[in-house]
Length: 252
Ligand SMILES: O=C(CO)[C@H](O)[C@H](O)COP(=O)(O)O
Picture 1: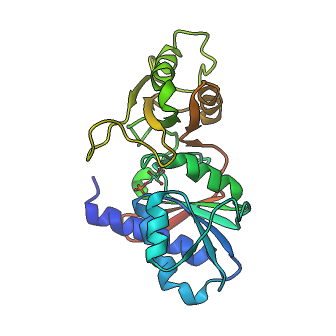
Picture 2: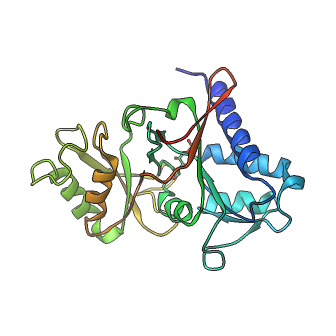
Picture 3: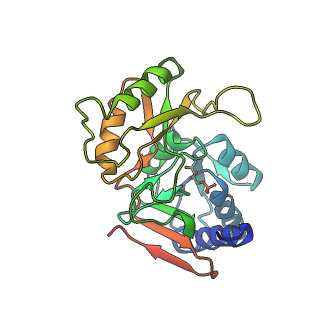
């Protein structure tokens, strides 16, 4: 297993490379994701401030990135005012060969997906541990699914019955019996509550062979607000490697 400092330096490399290559002076509206890797991207934006568009507006995807951007002195805006973005940059929990991604380890994937969809270009940044051929190879915590509180237990039951039912998602995943659990908070009693007031189910499907098919089935379950499968959205992914270099991939 890579040492924590190598992992942090890999995140830093990926973030710096992506910011340097994509946040050019022509970028005026920038979506900014959430998580620990994005912290490095915001620091790099701050370092590059003199080379950025003078009227740059950043659209954060979470309370976390909003606070970081404000602290760094950036102007923050929202999609009400800026519905179309030039670019969005975000981290990921795992990225497959086609650049489909699992996101939501930080429970922010609802807003992250809305912001990514509003952007003309969507760039992922991650350390080498997140790079895989097939989703589910590396990320073992399950697919994050944001649900309204009223529906969490019925959605959990529907997911766990998927394999027994007609299985609309047949062939999309490897787990013989998918299991879902409610994500619990660590510094609070009770569940994680998202920035939009919802709950998170983490559902283990094993290897995700057809993420788009699984996404379609999960999104059809009443009470599901968003699924942490980002299919066909990313234009490029930057991976920081253990040797300090960075590799960049386009969808194959
Ligand atoms: O999707 C996310 C938050 O909902 C994050 O982008 C994802 O969890 C990656 O986080 P990190 O950069 O800390 O590994």
